Length: 253
Image 1: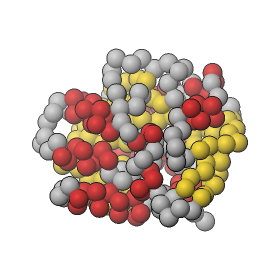
Image 2: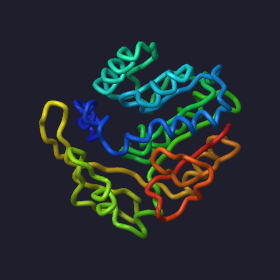
Image 3: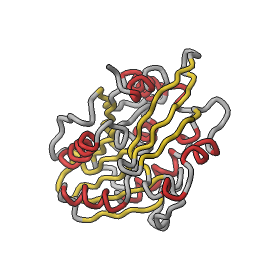
Image 4: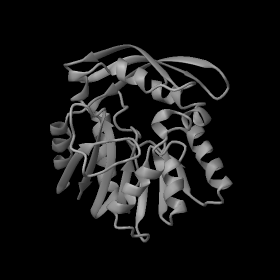
């Protein structure tokens, strides 16, 4: 049986690229570049790369990227976009819970809930962090965003998502946030690239900062910094607050 995220991304590449939450690519890549000291010699792993928006932009800037995703359809869209820009990028259909890389990359990125924290169990989400850690070289860096568990304690997730919706974008309804599991279950409605309307029961895990700290420390990351994630303007000058829907995490082995 397919999970909701597998069904969601079957025919969603063109529509996905128009979603509000995908419009911050340039600013996010500016931050990624600054975090690696603009060193074009490094190798970057983009986990849950989707339609390749960060991989393509970083390749245009001279970096070497391997992009992995579970969705063949999203990867096809990524390859089309790369070809249109005359770029050669190593896109691979792989499951982030089972990666073949060991000590190969200087940086791993997971932006906009790329794989983590969409999995149906905490153990699977941990496997994704673990595989990212294994893929990194000594002193390698992991940059990712995830849902901020502090936000639903003070705000309505449903109201926030509704406020972010643009014409033709996904909509969300029937949200229920479980305080015991920190999971939000909702009905996500999208129109796919073929014009079909899909109503999917989505289940996403929110994390509080102390959990992220503990998980990454258990994976032997030496430094872990957590900030508020502002769309397109990632910065170390944004302290995490209860107003932030997402967290930005920078961890170094």
